Image (cartoon, rainbow, N blue to C red):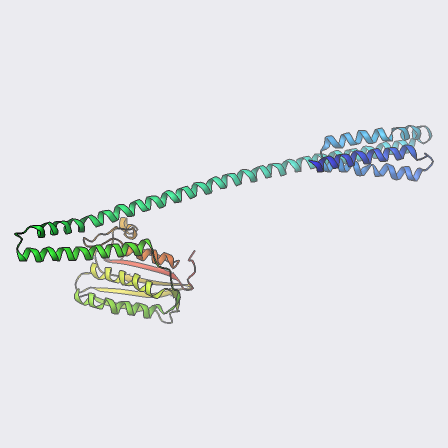
Length: 360
């Protein structure tokens, strides 16, 4: 506001000063008057540039009034010069008014842009707030689902423990019944412990200890650990690894946990005499590990749900194994997906960036 007032004062002051000089300087000093006449161009253009065409018109009227005494004198003694001055002043006025129109248009466009910018900032702020609210609601919903799932999973073993304890409290229970009840309490307590351990691993995953790892050797160590389960289930384990595999940055212990979970699931899903294959190769900057079985496969409508907490298709499963695996893979900026094999079986694919960076 003060800048506008100062500009207005300077423009009016310049016109008045030039007008006063026109009146004070004798008409015989033609060159000086010619210079003063052309200097009027500056405040007229400034009026149009800093304000608008209205201010330019006002400045033109004031300049004409300042010129009037000298113009009347020229009209008597030198009509040609007077005519030239009128034409030049008219050109100055047109230039000032056009400048004012352009300046006003540019100013309105700038104001519209500023208004649009403020509106976009407001909309962005509201959108960000809505996204934050949705994230909070999603987290609360996820917590509610986890709590409901955990409560449901805990209820069954607690009911078994309570029933066994009730039988033990009866004095006439036989030794055989007492032993069976104690076994139930022991097994269900172990089941609860596994459930809570898996839940803690899912809800509070430990931080990664990234280090260069040879994925082929890591898979071999996992297959060695799973060999006993494969042998008892009469399932063959096979590892197909590409040549010249690059090292990958990952947490080897957590990756072992993921792969062991997938391999054990594949063994349990496979019929007697079948083969569980683990294929390892790289595509550019991505390492891929696939665990393939020859079981019944995974229905298409369940291929995404199997990674949800407490979702399981097995009677004795906790529903947290694949959820924990998916969370570990996500921490590694990777991806895990489930697919069907042809003609039968399932395939779980892990994609990991070699350098540990985000795949996206």
